[in-house]
Amino acid sequence: MRQSGVQLVSEETPTPPPRKRWHWLKRDGIDLGDAVVQFIAMVAGILLALFINNLVTRRQQQHAVDEAMHAIRAELVANRAALHKSVAYLYQRTRQMLDSPKNQHQSPRPCYLWDQWGGTGAINLTDAAYQTAISTQALAHMPFRQAQQVAMAYGVQKIADKSFYLIRANILVAGPHPLSLCASAVESFAANERHLATAYTPVIGPDQTPWPTKPPNPLQSKADAGR
Image 1 (cartoon, one colour):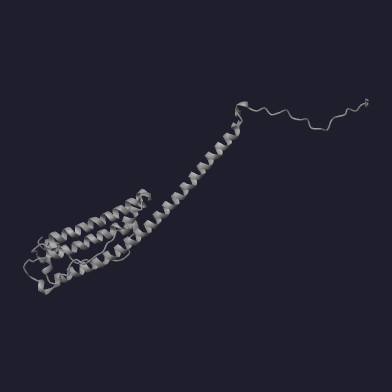
Image 2 (image 1 turned 180 degrees about the vertical axis):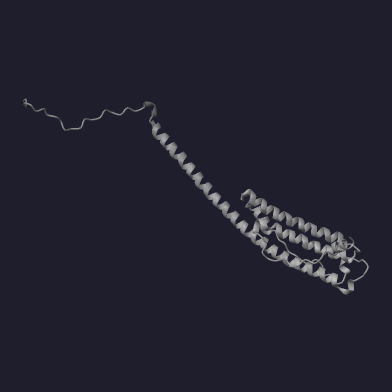
């Protein structure tokens, strides 16, 4: 039957043509497309795990560095305080030896036989925090400049320690020596210890504690008098 002037249009959506598939993506029952997606997801997961592991490792290393530096600074602060006490003691011994009436116009003798000789004192400078930082590899994870400053501070401390035993073995224990030389040797210990305290500055900052007044060097005084 014909309807004049009106054309009937079907309201049904036409079925789209079937999607063309790349036949090479599917071989022997394996969908290579899915395999590629799974492979990319696996690689992304591995990379993410490596990133997280690296981030955690860096945080652990930084924590170890922070703890090591806290211990090192505390150790050097304590060492500097010990140096202040030692220098004050050495200056006192020098003055008392030079001012003692019993030592005036006396013949040379071993330093320990001069009146008011009280030895060179006992100073305990430790490096336990530094050695621990090395053994735990915390020092290896520090920035280069920071590690260099720490190593230099403890290096000067080691040299000062060797210098102490060298002077003591060759001057203080040996003899006989005039009073001026023995007093000057004691004063030289104080000078070395003040230099060591300055070497700590890059690590723990400037020294705010005033030093005791330095006594005149007897050897220098004699040299000035002879001019």
